[in-house]
Length: 241
Image 1 (cartoon, rainbow, N blue to C red):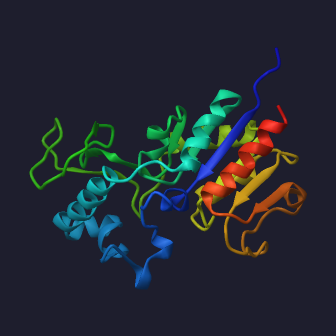
Image 2: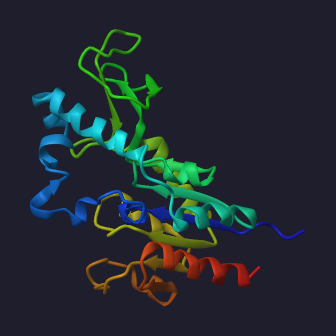
């Protein structure tokens, strides 16, 4: 029996855009649903105005209940029928899980979880609003389980993501501008001859992405939106089985 090939899917906000979740990149004047990012998505914002930050994420959490997975999410999950798939995502929504993907690394946190401000190891599943006065088991205020600007990524998650990149046979990048360090380096930790498929509907400047020269022959720009791009790659990969 042939060993199952490994796929790394590296996803970002553009993947969930077709489900109706707004992306920061598409927001006007640095606003995200009428909130300034620096006012709601930084550690300094939390220290300054906890109630405003909680309001913002409560709205995001409520919106998540109204949206559905799209074809791209479902095709990524369906790849598990034939491949060993690891999803490394910058998204904080749970649409990968709801679509059926089973091996997901959330680099930037999860909207449906909260954690203690005192002990970051105390993490709780949470689907409703978080309010001032909601506390962890140690009596500390709960906060969104989100990696804000100014905070470091979880080193264990990064280690797992790097391992997935180093071991994969195919890499699919979908829904991300590849502009956020250090996460954007992960897809290019793949072996030299591993094909990298980048689903991005707009033109791209190869110099801007700082792709290593040795990876260029194996870098494929799929100029489509997430759903159409994933359908194309899904078909191509299944032809190779």
